[in-house]
Amino acid sequence: QAMLAQVRCSGSDAFAMAAPKPPSCARRSRGHLLALAALAFVAFVLNATMAADGGITPTAFMGRGKPKEPEPKGIQGNRGTVKALTLLAVCCAVAAAGLEARKALRRSRELQRPYQVQDSNSMASVADPEGELCKIVTFIQDTVIVPIDERLPGRPFEYDLHSFPFTPMVLVIGNHSSGKSTFINRLLGIGAQETGVAPTDDGFTVLERRQMDSTEDGPTVLGCPENRPFRELQRFGQAFSGHFRRKRKALSDDAVLPFGLQVVDTPGMIDLPVAGGMSYRSISNANLDNTVRGRGYNFVDVIRWWAKRADLILLLFDPDKPGTTGETLEVLTKSLAGLDHKFLVVLNKVDQLDNSVDFARAYGTLGWALSKVIRRKDIPQIYTMFNAGFDLAAGAEHKLPLDAFARRRDEVVAEVLRARERHFDNVVTALEETMRQVCMVANVLGVMRNKAMIRVTLVMAVAFLILSAPIGVLVWLFVNEWVETVTLPFCVGVGASYVLLVLAVSTFFREYLRQYRMLQATSLDDTFEETYAEFFIHNDGEDHRSRWQVVRPKITSILSSIPCASSLPTFPKWEIDRIDQVLSKDIWHLRQLARLLRVENTGESAPDSGYASRSNTSKRRGGFGGSKSEAW
Image (cartoon, rainbow, N blue to C red; front, side, top):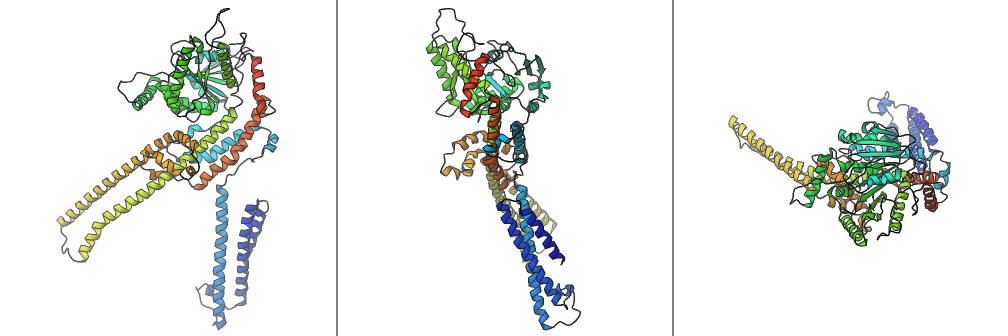
């Protein structure tokens, strides 16, 4: 009866839970109700049978006692029936409990969103799109990315996550004397940065428009509450923070740079001398080592940190040095990998060229240098511009089309001003790319771990057989009386031989596993192809292959930090499925929120009508057009 009461109570609770759920959950709940109803029926039959057979006591039924009175013959048959029904009832109860436990486990693995994914027609009802977007991004990072990243050695994605608030940013990088500081001064309308032919800036400088002038040193900026990600720069040490500063300037009304946008000026990329006769790879590694020794911090990693958070990246080149230096090569292949959607290549100072032949040589040299590091048939668009204004004497003529270069410069400035609008789009894009990289790392490492586990298990089995064979032989000798007496020299000899065998076997298989570990590290590309073999059947997978070039160094670093791939953590399928679920639903929702913020910031009525309004606004600020009266 107590069991029946509990079943009825559970059935009512399950029915109450099933009412507001979607159809799939409701069907599962109905299945649970059927199991509970069957259990209730069996319990009822059991109760009725027990009541009818009054001569059977509970202890006698369970086999732990004797009946008080002699049993009639019919009771024995009823006892078998009751036992069968009881066994059936227990099985039904266990099945119902298992279904409920499975349902609870699935519910715990599902993404419990504190928000609702809305369609595009319901976006207008969002009161605070920016706060909603920041909340969703933080939730996805904390519940989907961080649990996987924390189990990976070294946390390779720890500094790829976003934290808010963060001001939109433009990153300006390039070789020394490529016009970076001069271009920034033109944006500000004042000489905030020192300029010159020789390198003049030895650190990173953040410039921002404010109502009052102020200058802050690196340690102060790292604790800025308005830009929480700055605190992550502490990992680069005092050598970086000691040469890091922020300048806030009060600008005139006709200045090009708007409020709410920060521009980052970087040190010029140069190379320290390397020994002659070195290979290309050796020179590249030497340049990276010189970068760390010459600056005191890893310049390539610092640029990577800024580039991932920047909304626009300007890569400037000088016509006198259009080729890529070793440090520039490292930046292009490592710092800017996977960020093609937001960096522009600029050939600056073209007004210093004398004629079209010099321009063609400089342009061709830069295109040839870029083709060596950007493995595509189509090289990126190269913006040709100059910083100086039209200060030629009256009647003087230049042999190059400066008007066309001025228009190209205005296009670059327009992209700088558009950085605020694309800020949240870049946040969503970075989140999506990070999730795809996490998924790829988990998949590839999962395949490597499975292979290593099979290999380690095989090695352990073979080692066990080898080490067990002498013991078996010794036991067989004693059983068959081949050894009549056991002397001390015999025991010492057998023991020493076995110890030597153990050392030899362990050394051999340890070296075998080390070689296998090295083989896995050198065959990462083959493992990648094997992991995504089914995907490549009907798709060339260029997107996956380009992402693999970014992910591969992370996996290499992970493998170098562990003794064997078998010690890698496991990544269950439901975690990977959650990533796919977020990519298919939540990212689309974030895109709509970012579009809503873009429309609010620009006052656009349609997505395609924004450029004209932005251009008109910028012209009123004095930053566009080709006339001589502009701020340039």
